[in-house]
Image (cartoon, rainbow, N blue to C red; front, side, top):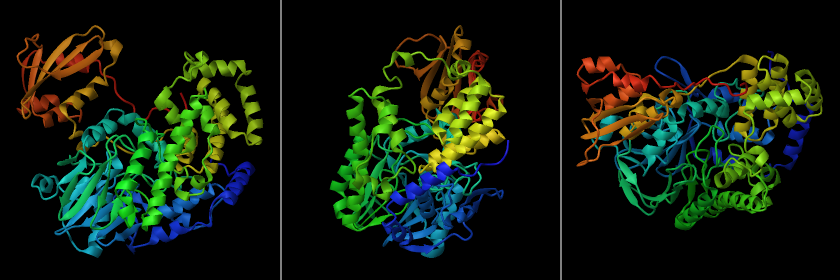
Length: 633
């Protein structure tokens, strides 16, 4: 359907206005981002064992050139900072690997070896980062692994830095906030297919890189495409103030659940006067609800935890660092950095609540809120990853839900039915496109995107509509300061022109699946039941989990798959079948695609009763679609 458009005069004028208003006189980030640099990975490319490139930081070399008209100048600056890669010294004994994945990996030297904090997304990038550290600091063993929170870019490279054998032997404790495993697995498995598909838009991993394509993701450049792994924690952090000593290093923890992740923690190194803020304070306004989808986060509690971190640790710190971006040095500077981050989330929360209590709805409030000058003039509060617009809508959703109170919106038609009626009312597709082109020529791209979307959803074969929408998305992307908005717009344009690129990342890796609990395994099954197909089916199956000495009952009735541990001392109806197996075998044959019959033949599963009843459940399963349409119906 053609190549990408060039930025229009309207976009160019918008970039010029943005550049004139931005605080370019504040250049402290450029000194901070290079401070402590030791060495870069040369070349800045990481490959898998089969030669597949899973990370290519060198492909962003174009960001060293002057800002083009097709990229917001603030986003260009942010991406230019984020491409700095290599090994950096944060303070004596603490080092970071930056620019080898979306996130950072931090290494803290202990008495014997080195503690790894957040081992990136992929085992391959984590291994490359550890090798770079060892090349310059010695071949120290990994004597501890810490996960700051339950998102994959903070645990996925675990098997790139340590082994399950070392963990099992106690040579490498794995420390995480309580609830970590439950949330890490649930997010990547329950809604994993839909989140991963939308994450492909959000991070732009499939987009061409360059001034007309992907230039970063705001939080880092993009997601690596290697092997996502997970080693379950062996040490839970359960309370603020809890202190652990790992390989001679004292660490004091602060629990921050419900902030950037459901299970998250900050922590302080008192002997280093260094504070790790996980992902609760980075050099961007973060998401309260990510564009890929997630649980809505709580900016009110987020702000309170930032205040607590300031009062507990920051005033006794010389440096603050996080799992993304670069550190901030100096007690006065870092306290102000954290205070502005606190003010940012607290202000958005309180002002959204003020206005919703006056009757304004989320879309209205998003257009009304302006940040105070002291916040707006700080680079690290800009919306490169989250944005004021979609964060305000998230706050509204958190308190008020999807419904804005207007009965006209209570029972609207579905997108396709609504689009067909809109197009008919507006005079047909040709007339809509004629008017839309006038609006496009006038630079009213937001309106064009809305009305042309009606035409595409009313008739997805309309090539003229898809071409105009692709052009429109590109103009909106070129003007966006927010990297994830740019990636969404440009991904939509790419798929309209070229067809779906699917889902580049695979969140449900064998290592992640291996961490599923018995309850989560059957939760996954329950999410696949096609309710109407199962209305009339009645099945009861018991699963004897041999290595956990428990019997878990699975009951299908009324289209719902219910499951629970059998209570002791209570008379229960007899099951149709009983299967006896280990949890690992259960995962292999029920969720990881293993051959059930072969496992039974090999003796990994024993059974009694009528095993064919299992097919009554499997027969009503639906399959997730990792290539579902986004910009077309």
